[in-house]
Image 1 (cartoon, rainbow over the protein chains, first blue to last red):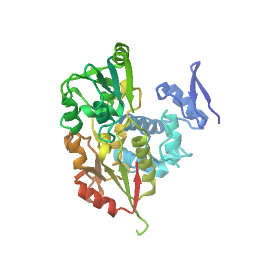
Image 2 (image 1 turned 30 degrees about the horizontal axis):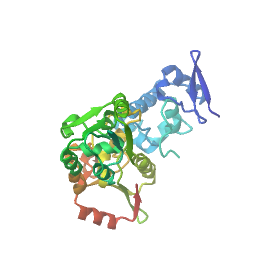
Image 3 (image 1 turned 120 degrees about the vertical axis):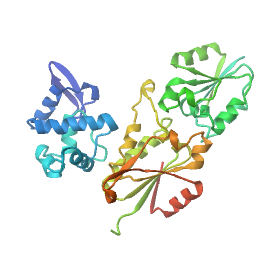
Image 4 (image 1 turned 180 degrees about the vertical axis):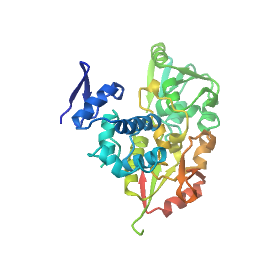
Length: 113
Length: 101
Length: 135
């Protein structure tokens, strides 16, 4: 992928060479669906739960959490059946932190390997 | 010939403010910007030095104060808080600007 | 585990005037992935990084202060702040943000990570670290 634009409702939203949007304020639910489609993900309620959780986390701490931190925080809020690596990787096969953050319109998590 | 002196370094890391205050003359203005604004915190060593200067106007930039959590109640008296527009006014109302870096 | 090293991140710069504070924070966040024994030290102008109440809107820069409060999630449990550095600058512990972690050995009780130490104690903490990263 190279830097370019997502098309949402006839509007162009710029993204970087990895697909992360450039201006965090450009995010919308419609845009999330567009990014998810490109990542081959059908957004279910479970996907949205993670995406919304990430947006809340970012809102509070101004950082996108590393996967380990995401798992721990999910566990605390939703319990162990959702706060584990397997569950999150099933929802976002190419890496929950990376893929879900991209859909949530956040920057790439710091220290994401 | 009134001078505007700007100081952008923390007085606790460098002696920029001290050096500036050793060179000011009556009627001059010292404007604290960036990390220079840390000098105004009440109870700090630099604030005591600042308060002892006579005949010189002391000003500080509001954007830099706010960014660092320095609210009015934490500041010593006698410091005029200016915004970016006020910064420009100070530049135009003085004959020269000396930037202490 | 014998391969766990004691990392000490030493912060000596004010938050906005230079990029050091933000860079240090990012390295701490990245380094957390390696599960080492991490401690942060704040002395000299570094103590300004923890002074609460930043409002960077007028500055047009991102407010990265909330990220410090997330460090507990990243298993940072020891934040040493030098008392003398605070006092010289007219500051006290009350001026600092709250930083907490959950103690797994104590039923996940939330505890403060901040420990105010003397200059002498800070010297010992530095001497005691395996690796020191300075910012």
